[in-house]
Length: 145
Image (cartoon, rainbow, N blue to C red):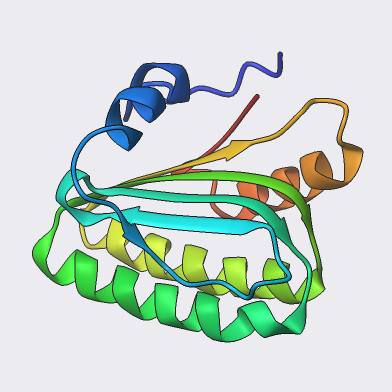
């Protein structure tokens, strides 16, 4: 275990299962060939992205998501984001940087933002990407497995 923790929010094991199972979920449509699931549960201030994100066709999906997150922060003070990818490409990484920039802006405006990068310790590529993200967004970015 890497020991990345935060006093700002419960751990994924405490919050993730309970939150996902309650309330209406807003699924965001992703390209058919991707095994990518995006659920934005606005009433519970939770965003979940998991799966495979490797084609250019996901670009409009992330752009739509970024706009929804911006609108979310106009009315809400909090967002907890769980990211659990199998594999991502450079395009997804760039789009995630854009999403995290929105999170940083919200954090600087006093909003409570937490991002859990949920990765298998043996997945060196995703661990390295997570460590890069954590370097830029250490205030709200937590690596966990």
